Length: 495
Ligand code: AHR
Image 1: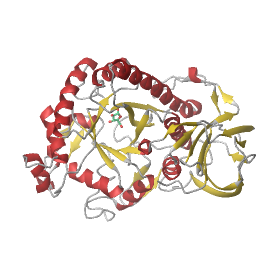
Image 2: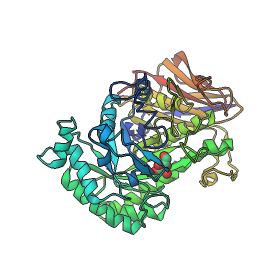
Image 3: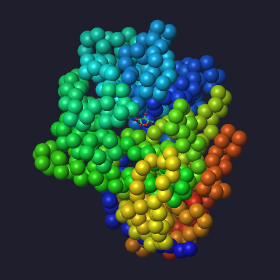
Image 4: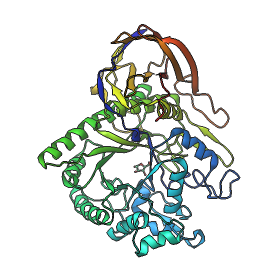
């Protein structure tokens, strides 16, 4: 099969925000305990952090980490997790039906962020939590006065304010599974009061309104109700299916959601004469459909990695509205990294994430692709999510996203060949005549779409690198079946 990929450095879609590469860690299963934090492990440092996890996370360079939930946060009292560890209460945890030791808390998380070079994003408890608690949390983290909470932070070993910039106003407050779920109208009322005291405590913070999936009436009511006070509107969509094509194509639902959310925000900002921008924080996304109970230790296939790469492409294409996205989650729980007591392995989905971390550049280009298409036949697979994307097709078998450096001397082209069976030779065309240049070609490859990594076979799906001396107009780029290929030209592309 052949295809054509046309690149024009002048056709710019907008500026890509690196915060789309952010992460999320929840007190759930083995994400915190036994993942990030593993007291007593020979691999743990003096703070109890797993050093091998730190290295694996650092390579993904997440600009922001969201914490502590997720559903967990709606029953979480942050004051339980500060001060001397041995005096912290052990609580019944109702979101995931477990027990919370509170041995990892606010100061531990903020230290972890510092260690991996990420900015923290704290989500407040709007379920069982009070306005006072949310206000006090901002004061504990960011206060520089002589107040009780700022002093408690100093007593706990952090003299200066942490300066936590991002604060979420609750998690999935629309859902019956959420402790303290609310109607959209009641949520808006309550969130406005939380927002008020949090911003009076620190006017520098950026608040994230709790959206749904970008497509619901909840989203409309919340954007209308909070537009004057929030900088962000959050949405969550997970996808996944045992049906190969459904699995790799459903991430396009993210594009529908982003289009709809962008339109809502635009209309509300116009009608309410809101000057400040409001961006989408897509603060939970991933393939997730297999492990819906206890621990959520999903094992990812190569097909899932292609889906994850498609999400990343969607964020690049919609870079004007989505300025933050948080992969759910970081370690063990629906995660790219899996630990045991003495080692870890990288799941298939780790690889596209790492390639984006290394090679994403600031300008999104409007790529033209000419290739075969696939019509999705809607199939209902038990256990999958009810997203329907067939109407968005036919889908190009190749999904391509390209980003360039400001000056146009660096270029990254990311291509997903979603054909489960066919190699595709793609002819590269440049709008302007350019000298052929050396390019690095990195391919995420595996024996078949169902291939997974494991402790026994950590590299079954891995990145294979090739150097091309003369990549330019007319180059024929070989794209193996079920693969993700990233071509980089010019300066490293690291910020
Ligand atoms: O990431 C797992 C869960 O998915 C989160 O706790 C919740 O916010 C979402 O439903």
